[in-house]
Image (cartoon, rainbow, N blue to C red):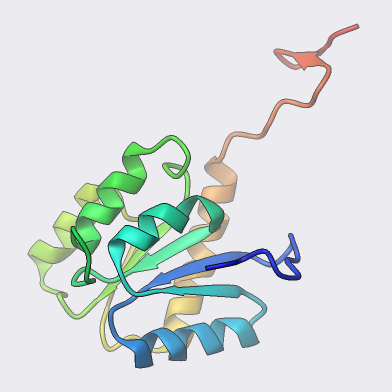
Length: 150
């Protein structure tokens, strides 16, 4: 999947990992209207490969692939390239044990289905704002430990 066409760096990219094509399309269209770039994925293997190119990951639990959505969250948190990215789980598996497993794996938000697109948007915005506060800022070139190197 090519994500490089006419990329505006100011538009956040949401990786939508969902087994239902209808739900994936509904969320993607809504997010596009709200000025997000939505990349649709239907399996955990592709999601793991593309996660580092996204600003935020939204996944279900029962997503096809070699592992489920909770394991996807664990793997993303274990990878230095993706451990800082916000992850939201949206799932019909909404009982308390599912919620606990998802949070234990490292997700930043958990939404039960049915989930309205506006509810997902609010959670994405919340997660992005929290992660941007926590994310370490890069050290400018020509500096060391905050001091200018001459």
